[in-house]
Length: 361
Ligand SMILES: O=C(O)C(=O)C[C@]1(C(=O)O)C=C[C@@H](O)C=C1
Image 1 (cartoon, rainbow, N blue to C red):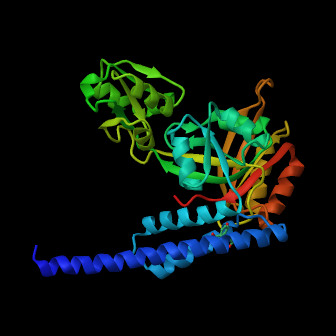
Image 2: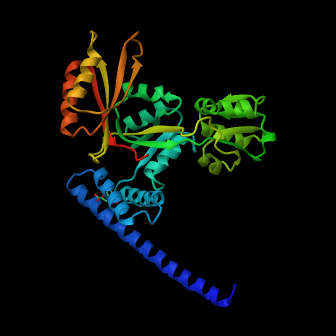
Image 3: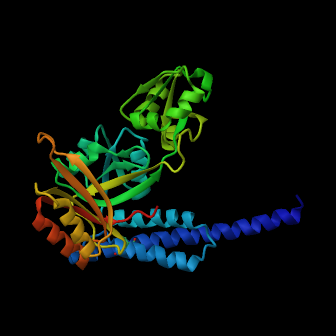
């Protein structure tokens, strides 16, 4: 490289250093303003989290950016900035289905950013109990997978615990085969969570036909086992690789592409409207012909878009069911609140589980 080129690089790097300093100073200034708003909200008893304001910030930035800076990167940079500012107003402790480095942990970090504090729990029920008792502000639990379907333990927990849904997260699931050495020949057993093993069934049958599988509590627990034993391979998340210092043997061994899991954020209280929300209900129907049809008719009449309906048996009451309904809109929207009131009058059981911003992807 010629000395002129070298000095040009130095010059441009100096300019980049100046820009980075400006960004840092602006970040400090932004944080101070967010703290100030936090105090003003305390004085006026307003909720700290304002999903509508946050959505408006993203929309304004995307419009100004006009795709010059990659949009996904812009979103995650500002997501980290805004969650850090929000957390400076009110700290968030997040319980999740652990141990460390499970996909639920990854979903929690995607939602709350790196500044929140995270608390792994052994089971989904523990996450619900933790939030209901007020020991942590929020919980993250898986609710459905695009291939394996509903996570029944999460749905059933809504029947037992008084919590509200505050948000949803969608995470594309990429399963990695990992082990200590990164060498496939070293693997004598493949450990993982039942859902992960099921989602990679064909790959395992084709590529490791004589290697037995071992079902464990979570993908995080499998990664931990692989870290302790050189002959155990685990199917685990990218976060597990970093957390347990494992090597990737093969990336993306899931049988179907587009394998996505939806997670719910639970907490004591749903947020205010964001302008693009989902409302969830848990209802029991009257024991008479056409009772489900009556509910669906209300949705049609009120022009409410039903996103999902799922039934679960009521424990201890043979052949009796509760229905989970997801509708597009917020309980504060006129249509939704009127529709829900009408539904409540026709049901043997009615519970509003929450209204919350829809996930972006
Ligand atoms: O504008 C507000 O109400 C703020 O509290 C600031 C801020 C932000 O960092 O931009 C933080 C939290 C809210 O959810 C919305 C926005």
